[in-house]
Image (tube, rainbow, N blue to C red; front, side, top):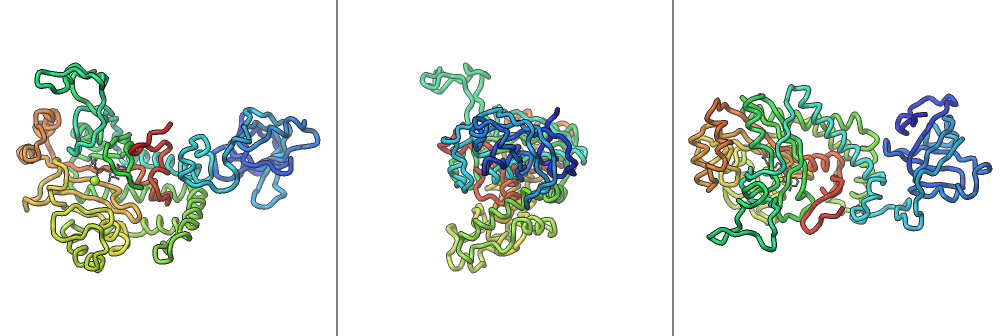
Length: 477
Ligand code: 4AD
Ligand code: MG
C-alpha cells in the first residue's frame, strides 16, 4: 500500500479506512502515543500503539528521531488538538535513533546551536516552517514569470567576468596554489589554468541575462551567486540565490512596477499556501520580540506585516530626496546614526535605509536615481551627468531587498563610463555587442532570495533561512 502524507491525512474524513504512514518520532508518551512527523506539515500525527500486543523490545526502540512505518486505521481523534489519529495495526522500526545522543529534546534550542547540528535542524518546527515557506516562494517566483511569458535562462556559475565591477569574487582554479606557474613578469600564468584564463564564481547572471533579453524580450535567471565580501552581518551570505529578470523595451518605471508586482505576488502566495507555517513563525517572532525593550518592539505581527506590504503602494523617491529627508531628520541632528549624513553623494548604510522605511515612510520604499559613482557601470546615465537610472527597493527589517536599473543602451556612453571606471572593454566585448546589433532600452533587477525569505518568515538572521549557510570563516557540511 502507498503511504499517505500526514498533511493530507489531517484533512481526510476518518472512516476507519486502512492507511500507511511513514515518518519520524517526535515524542512517545506512556508507551502508547507517538507524535509522528513526516515533514509535510508542522502538525504531528498521533499514532496510538497497542502496547499490550507490541513486544517490549519494539516499544523500547520507539525513541525520538526513529524512522517508523505504520499501517493502521484512521479514526476521529478522542484527544483535543487534532482531528484524526491512527490506531497502529502494524508497526515497523525502519531506522533506529540513538536516543541518548539525539540532542533534540522537546525543549527549545537556540537557532545558533541548531546551525551546528545539521541533521536536527530540518526536523525542528521552526526550520520545517522556514524551508517549506522557502520552497513556496521559489515556486511562486517561477509561476509569476511563467504566467507572464518570461523565459527562464540558466546563466553560468563559472565565469571570467566581474558583472558588478566590485571585485568581490571567489577564484576558480586548478593550478597548484603552493607553486603556480609564472610568466616572465612574475605574475601567475593563468593561460596554463584549466580554462586558459583567470576565472571566478559569478557574482550575478545579469550580463549574460541581458544577451538573452535581446532575443527573447523578457527573461529571468534564478540561481546561486557568490560574493567574497567580508561582511559578517545578519543580512549577508557568501553564497546566496538571486532572481534576475531582464526586460527589453522596459524603462525604469516599468521595472519598478514589475518588481513591486513580483514581491506582492509571492508574499500573497505564501499567505495563501503557507498559513500554518506562517502562524507558527509569527508565534516565534512574538516570543523573540518579548525579549526586546518595549520601544524596540514591533507593533505588528508577522502576518499583519506581510498583509501591510500587500495593501500599500511602495513609496517611490529619488536618492536626492532621500538624502534631504535624512539630513534634516532629528536622528541625524542628534547624531544617532553611526554614519552621519552630511552631503550628497554618500552611499546609504543600512541604518539609513531602515530609517527611511521604518521611521519616515513606514512602508516599503523604492529609491531611484543614485549618484553614478556609487553604482555599477551598466546603469543608464541621466542627463544631469551626475546620477543614473538605478532603483533599490528597501524593506522594513531588511534594508535593500532588490537592486536594479534601466541599462545604458547607448554604446558610446557605456564605453565612456567603462573607461572612466577602468573596466576593460575588450574583455566585455561580447556584452558590448548587444549595443551594436539592435540595442534597445531595457531594464532589470536582482532580488536577493534569502532576503525575501528572511522578510516573509520573520527570521532575524539570514543564516537561518538557507539550508547550509556560507559566511566568512564558516563552511560547514
Ligand atoms: O544590488 P546587487 O549587487 O545587484 C546586482 O547584482 C545586479 N546585477 C542585479 C540586476 O540588476 N540584475 O544585488 C541584488 C540583490 C540585493 O538587493 C540583495 O537583496 C541581494 O542581491 N544580495 C545579497 N543577499 C545576500 N547576501 C549578500 N552578500 C548579498 N549581496 C546582494
Ligand atoms: Mg545593490
